Image (tube, rainbow, N blue to C red; front, side, top):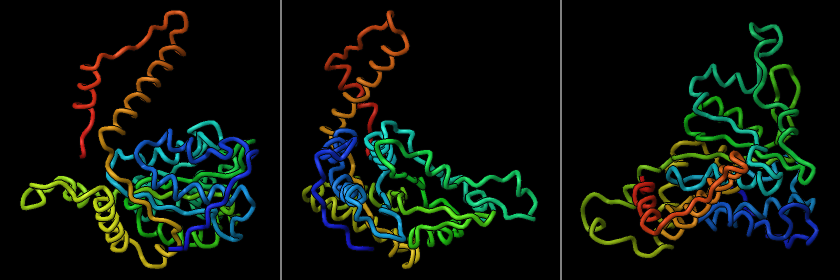
Length: 295
């Protein structure tokens, strides 16, 4: 992995997100302060005009159990930078499990059957379309990268290293103003067993402290990454970030956010007929008990 950049103090007039970019992200993605701390310096470096030439602004592999906020992180960053969670280009890697399906990303070359009908999923126009007046930084998300066929990983090597992708029609896509995120559930089963051991001494005692527990999860995730991906692929990733399971305090905050989102939805849809949503303490306890689990 590359050495992370030195954090840069942002200017006070840095546009949307400004100097409190970290605080805005932490208020949207609950319980994952380490992830936010890893990502924000790359955004600040781009804003300062110091991002390296000839490669993406940053490449991140987000690991951890499902439901811990990996995809939510990219959506929150899009909201802070561009004002909408939809201002990102998302590739669902579960749709590219077969080798021939990977060609959909770049389109068929001229002369091949289906050239005109097969439009590339990643183009310069699509990358530019997810920017905004407040930020020219594109966000590209490869969701569940471990499900993709091996040819996708080979295709991504030039993107992660040289910030260039050659399409089937021989045009190029430039990623020098792009943050690339790869999410994965690699090691999730082993992490779950670490958190909920079935038998033995570990089943009778909790993990020894939050830092020790997170370090163990990081070790599990890192081992799974090295088994799945080639060294040259891993070396092109700026940061491998392991998301930790959410505690009760984080769940309480997330519940408050979801209730607020429900209230806004009711207000927007029903207008004059809108009503207030109120929860008793027993109702909150029921939602938290039945709506969450480590699995």
